[in-house]
Amino acid sequence: MSQTNGIPFIDLVAPHVELEEELVAVVKKALRTAGFVGGPMVEEFEREFAKFCDVPYCVGVSSGTDALRFALIAAGVKPGDTVITVPNTFIATTEAISQAGARPVFVDIDPRTYNLDPASLLRYLETSCDVDRVTGKLITRKTKSPVTAVVPVHLYGQMVAMDSICEVAEHYGMIVIEDACQAHGSEYFSAKENRWRKAGSIGDAAAFSFYPGKNLGACGEGGAVTTRDEQTARKLRMLRDHGQAQKYYHDVEGYNGRLDSVQAGMLAVKLRRLSTWNAQRREIAARYNELFGSLRDGLATPYEPDWARSNYHLYVIQVRKRDELRAFLSQAHVGTGIHYPIPLHLQKAYEDLGYTVGSFPVAEKVAEEILSLPMYPQLGHEDQRYVAAKACEFVEATSDQAAAMRS
Ligand SMILES: Cc1ncc(COP(=O)(O)O)c(C=O)c1O
Image (cartoon, rainbow, N blue to C red; front, side, top):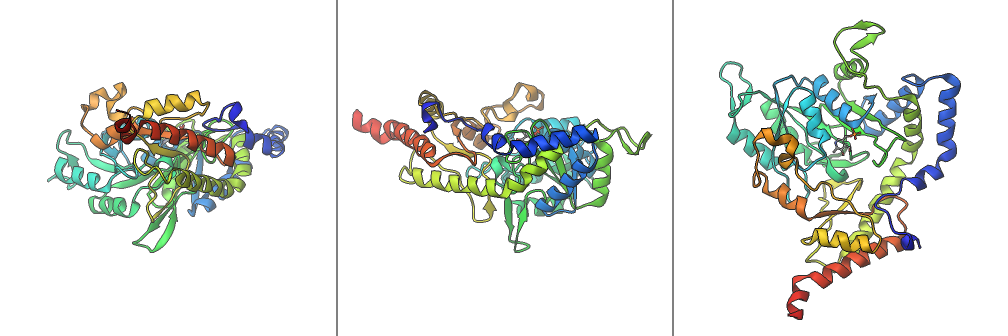
């Protein structure tokens, strides 16, 4: 049992020990061909990841943040635009919006899925925006800037209710960029199309992160944009490479945002295991749900609607005494995480956006109560049972009922 040494929140050593030979072979191949940036290993990975996501195009880039920024620019977001997203996400989502020259605006999340609430999006568009009489474009009432895009974030690996988002976006002529940075292999059942769709295959473009801790993680930094649109893919290839399609012929100013070959080669090795790893994560999530089943009150397990198949990048519970539970688990040598403790609209970096406490009540409440438990494909049954038992012990001892009985 590893719980004597503690149960980490994430285990990044085990998968790399298992794959060491194949990963070292990738490094050797790069050294022997001096193919470090671009080249066949990047192209092969892009082909394989595009296939995995069910799209014709994948463009490898240097991080998920760059993937989002390039996706926004390539899909048509312009400086001065307004782009809508959620406050419950990693700051990279809004950094990318700002770095594309646009202004982020938030709408609240759904209290059960923790993801963008389509009703909040619609309410914002209907009550805080107008159609400009001259341009016919949607503009915000407050800043008069055109509202051109929405970024649904498939947080924790569970996809946003995309039919509703796409319907609203189509009605208002908005671009949809999926933040799929946590959603490699996640699926969504589109009632409109009567079929399951992969994360990254629905919006105008989608951004993935290959940060090491992701379900598909590089051994360093990496990211990718997927799209069904050939023109967008062409622009993305230029943006990541200084605005050039042909060496030293720069059609536009771009960025140094390429995926390096060693990372692409290693990602290709891991991509072959991704479906198995995701299935193992789903089994672990089901087991946690079962272990917490008897608690009912006091601890909410993740809500997975019928139309979603999460990749369980994170297994996030909601409890009232979150900080105390976290400290209790830490004493029991169980690692946990909080994703994320401060909603973006209350971050110092976004003071100038003018939001206050109370602007997004659901996101604010959730941020105080969520806790991410250990979740990785190699998490053993016994370790998992130990984590769940400790969490149950705390919740049972601190529940209102227990308090009432003691008094
Ligand atoms: C939701 C979300 N968006 C964007 C990013 C940015 O990805 P990266 O760290 O690869 O730049 C991350 C990664 O942490 C993320 O979780």
